[in-house]
Length: 77
Image 1 (tube, one colour):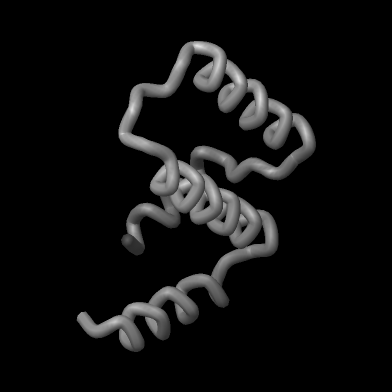
Image 2: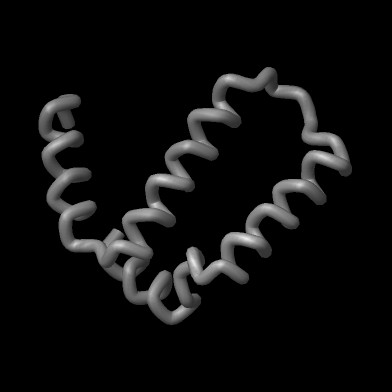
């Protein structure tokens, strides 16, 4: 698939998401881009624990997506 087609498909799916789901997808993309910029070295235990702490804080703020919603979303992937 060509880049323009992929961008259009991504945009079509993105527009169907709720605001909470959109925030979650944007955060996943940010994380993916940050990780790809790092060297392929293993993540330290401190970094791993920090990532978990950040994720738990997001959920506590209501920024997460419920498991049931993710399962529904995954059926369309």
